[in-house]
Length: 487
Image 1 (cartoon, one colour):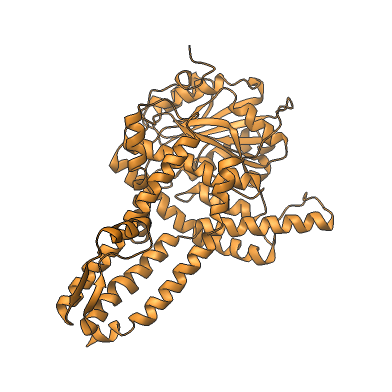
Image 2 (image 1 turned 135 degrees about the vertical axis):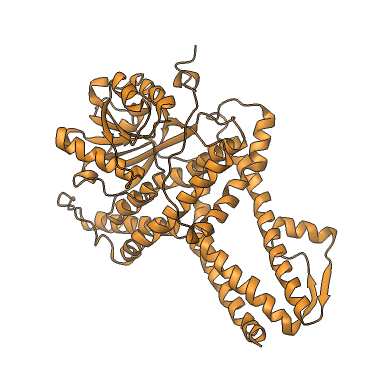
């Protein structure tokens, strides 16, 4: 029978799947070091009075409810206003976004192109107009923000500290302005804070390359002298991977804080997560090969005529740094969840169930795994099950495969509750005051963020995903969040 023939492959497939999963774990084990570093350290930048000239770029589609508040927070910066020029691209807008931008003193370009409607295309259009009307080198650096953001009064000053220290690409502390609106916004908020402790801080200390996350970042004009070419579903991942492949360091400044609005509905959240997942996969295939080659051959893709001719020792150190950053970025782009899901489905779901048609089930433990949950359950009860060979064994095998997967994910969920609580504790001074009950709900539900991510990563492989705007409605202003402005 075909079922028995496929089932006979189980031992081999199980061994291969186990080996690959072990390799996946080994390749990502170094992230524990990131977490340990992130708990205690972050890169510091000396404050400077050497001010640089910046452009602030804001792509906006029907952002009438929130754009004014962002522009107001920019006006309240303690940075010299004559060194800041704000550009807004009103992208396919049907509301008063462009009018508000101009009334608030921003330079506004309007774009109407519904065939190319990603954020990346809006930025590409904006850079084309800046190049035509001002020249790319008219500004030393470029900030990119989403229209729903709010900036603390010293945000640009603190980012300028790092830029003046020679950092070419820099991201910042992403806080949330609607943290306590509901459990969906709160788990998003905790995710961004988790990224700070588990990724950004350590990578900045080690002079590697952290990842740009859509908004709240600054880069030198040399990166866009030839224009903005990142127009995929997740332009931030493509920008990150390309910059790392070219040898750039991407740092992080813990002192520069801005606030972001998070989704509050299941529908909008799922739409956004699907776009992230699809863009993640596309970035892996677009930039992964370059990063892989760079791990072994160094800066073969870096074309920089002004690159310093360092001494041999410094060149060696830079070569090691660049290779490590390329490896780290490649690992971050690799869709391990998709690969793991495929291995589970083929080896532990399909082939395992078919194998039981011939072998049956003989005293199989219903509680298995090495998670804390599994070990705790085994102390209470550890039932076994036996079924004779045949169709019943196949059906029960399918049920067992699903049950073992649920048990594994439940263990991960419980572990993440403790992890989220720990991050909450570490960042308690930066999180807006909220009732204890809401903090508890946030910690108990936060693991859903990663579980949903596993789900959307797999769905994104098979679904056609387009770019749709995320509606923003929060009326929160920077006066309500920045201690320096609170009355």
